[in-house]
Amino acid sequence: MSSNSKKQPALGRGLSALLQNSDTDITSMSGATVGSVSMIEIHLIEANPFNPRTHFEKDALEELRKSILTHGIIQPLTVRKLGRDRYQLISGERRFRASQLAGLKEVPTYIRIANDQTMLEMALVENIQREDLNAIEVAISYERLIDECKLTQEQLSEKVAKSRSHIANHIRLLKLPASIQAGVRDQVITMGHARALLSISDEEEQLIAYQQIIDDSLSVRAVEQLVKPTTSTPAPKAKTEKVGLNSSEQVFTSFLSDKLGAKVSIDKSETGKGKVVVHFSSETELNRVMALLKK
Image 1 (cartoon, rainbow, N blue to C red):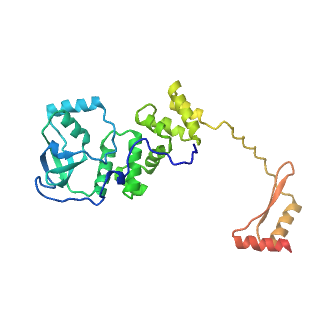
Image 2 (spheres, helix red, strand yellow):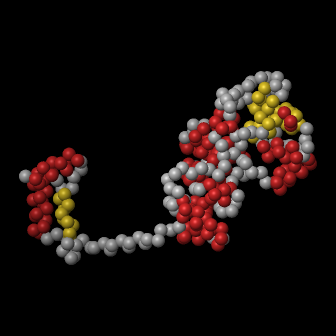
Image 3 (cartoon, rainbow, N blue to C red):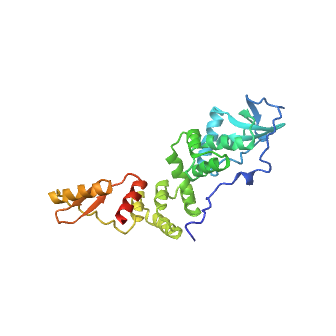
């Protein structure tokens, strides 16, 4: 497969695949009050289709379930109002799922009204900042914010309080084959391993190196050595010491400089080799010197 072909991410879906109507924004004010924290029956809330997190660890959810049973929900969920007695999560899906496991009938929620585009941006930014997403999920979130929310990397950098290089390094991971992206997502390899594999231009060679990382339990440093180009860079030539010009050479440079109307210098080494250099400060001056030399 050509390394130039566009790689498909290991997970994640576009906005158009999730929405039947991208202009949806039902602002009915019935029921709970928009802009307040209210107790809402949990069965009235539907999951957020924009959430970049697709994997929820069972052990972590179980711990959160026990915490909710003991202490309740400390931080309210954030939902948007879809209509009469219908709500959709903007953020807090872990708390939502753990509350379902705990058998809660209602949960505290902060209610907002947002159209789908605004909701997507809010959900992605909130999750990037608050949730422990893996590097691929973060990369997909960054890419979706740029592509679907029409953000520049500079704007995204400000929204998520991350450097542009941090954002770019994550997005580059999506150029890797889907199986390697899945390996990062599932913690088979680290982001450091994946970044090292990006140094390989051929996809098949990337996959071979990826399998070698797994088979030999290679460290990131070992992978960096593995993918380093085999051709050695030739050592730079030793500089030769320049020598001064004798009187006749000095006279010649002055004569040529006057003749051409430009600075002329001679670089000469101890071996007698060297070059005559005609200096110019613009293309116009170069053309003038060339015209004089042609006469």
